[in-house]
Image (cartoon, rainbow, N blue to C red):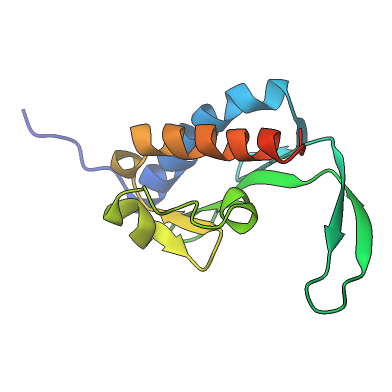
Length: 136
């Protein structure tokens, strides 16, 4: 029996849902900023301070952004802030995961096959970083 070919859009929709499923357990301890069919965002509820490296000025902030998903036309954007917070955060992840990283905090996923155990490890490690830094 021939395998039914899935459209690119259906594959992206499934990829979005697979990533969202991996993120959902963290919403119990955080706040959902946005939950729409093609966009999902999660943040902490902590207050924190940021000091500018350039000016030395300290600014009070609220609700640090943890993770977000955006279903784009050709990929699902996985926006994850932990690599910004922790130097060397991505050092122990596979080359395949590092290739999905565009810039410092956005990963591109194009299929459900790419959403594996390493995404779980990424989220778990990021959560631990947030906890260690008092951002939860």
